[in-house]
Image 1 (tube, rainbow, N blue to C red):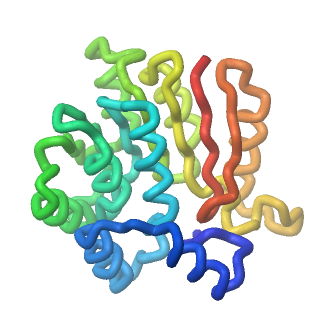
Image 2 (image 1 turned 60 degrees about the vertical axis):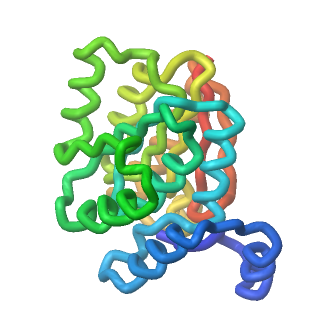
Length: 220
């Protein structure tokens, strides 16, 4: 997985950040701490985080969903972009990684906006649907285990309102999706998922070559 946008030279990438990135200090601190962790490659790129925040603001979103929290950067980005009454329902299975997330959410003053569920995300999504929350979310960000992308997507489609947006990370998979010689299970799962979205008439979509590839789907 890439921590910066694919296909840019290092110099051009640094220029991109220098003229566009407006990263709050709390996010910089979180990103720098995460960079010291053994699974640091799971961190989203800062320019991607800023893009997600802009989408949330453009939509005037109030209720959002996050599948895959890690150390909490993307949830913090979204929470900072939400109004004071906004809410992020965040799903992860790791107490260890989300302990870092909770600390930064608290420091940033947005812990009350983020409802963290430590459980398999499919269980949490099923509970939300059973609790009558279908079509009540404005925005969802999917960045969890790739083998379940299709399942996460199908449940998110049910939870997102018409006109709502789902953003799915890592859809270019460091370029491996375009290499026919790569036939591992996760790569094949992402290829199949990308084909499914391309054919899904329930949504309009665009695959954005930012970071490791981000597909945006708008529910019709």
